[in-house]
Length: 389
Image (cartoon, rainbow, N blue to C red; front, side, top):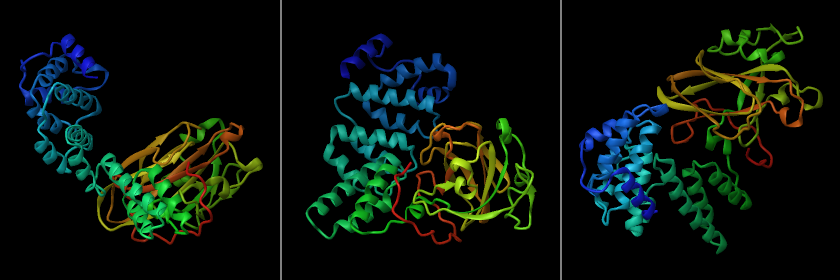
C-alpha cells in the first residue's frame, strides 16, 4: 500500500511542503465538491496541498468531515490516508481527543481510531472497550463484539456470568447480525428475547383493503385512506374496494420477532396471495417529546409512507429484495400523538417469489437505538423465531 501511495504522490505532485491553499482553505474547497465532478478541478489542487501537510494537520482535516457530503468525505479521507502513509509519527494524543468528542462525524472518528490502532494497538483497544454506547455504529460494533467474545468464553467454560454478559452485549448491539447471534446464544440458554422491543418494531396496526392496482396504477391513485392519513382510522368508514364491495379498517397484529407485517394474512387469496392490489396500514405512536428520529422500513413491494398526514417518501418498485432497515427516512416526532400510514402495493406477477406482500417498520434514532412509544402495547405472543430476512 505504501508503495502504491508513493507512486500516486509522484504522479500527482505531492512531494514536499504544502503549496497553494492553506489547510482551512483547502478543506473548504474539498467540502464544496459535489456530484458529477462538481468542484473537482479546484479539489485536485486543494487535495495536493492537504496531502503534503505534516501529520499534525490530521485532526484539522478530520474535522472537515463534520457535515461533509459523501463526495467531499472521500477527498478528505484520502488526504488523511496520504498524510498518515508517509508519516513516521502521528499525533496520537490529539487523535484521542478528537475521537473522544462524539460531536464529530462518525466516519472521521472511526478513521481516527484506526490510525491510533496502527500506532498504539493497546491504547486503541482500551478506547474501544469504553464505546458500548457510542453513537458511531462502527465503533459500537467493535465494542459489542468484544463483549460477545467474552460472553462466549464464559459460556464455553460453563460460567453462569455468560448470560449477563450476553444481555449486556444485546442492550448495546445495533448491528443486525450481532443481534441475531446474541439472541441465538440466549435462547439456547432458555432466555426469552423481546426482539420487537429491542428494534422498536411497530406490531399493532389497523389495515384496510384491498383496493385496485391493475397495471400497477394503484401506486399513483389516491384512495380514500390517503385523505385522512393523519387521523386515527374511523371504524365506521367504508369505501369501495377492488371488487366493488365495501372495505373497512380492521385490527391486525404481528407476532413476528422481526416485526413482519404480512398483508397476505390479513387478506388471504388464492395460492396464498392476492395480486394487483393495494392495502393501507395505520398506527399511532405517542412520543414523550418532540425529537428527531428515523423511520426504518423493509419492503420488497411498492410503497408510500405518511407521518402525521404528510407524505414522506415512496418507491414505485417491486420485488427488489428485502432486509431490515432497507430504507431510512428522517422525521421530526411530535410530542404526544403521531400517526403513521403505510401504503403497500402488490403487482400482477405470479411467480412464487412475487407473492410476498409485507413490510417491517420501526422508529429509532440515527444510531439505530429503538425509540419506544409511551403507549406501546405489550408484544403479541410469539413462537420459535424464524430466520431474520
